[in-house]
Length: 114
Image (cartoon, rainbow, N blue to C red):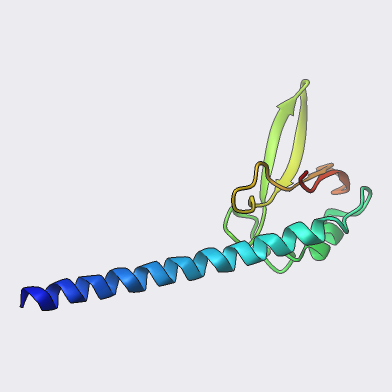
């Protein structure tokens, strides 16, 4: 009975490991696709056009999940700076960012990594 119980828990652990690895690689593949498409973005585009090129426009809810970006508002030199930040690639040093004007929704600056 003890051996059966150990085998059941080992099987549950193995299935959990496989599921988590699958989720990780799926999210990483999507993040890498966003980073590749970032090079096609140009300053002056609308935020909607930029998101369409990146590929996350189909995710309409801007929440921080693995499929879309997060809106970050930072006060810098007494001005508010609005950016759309995407997930970092595995072992990356910084997030991909699109800075935009909140009134016109025009992309004003792009950071696609170094």
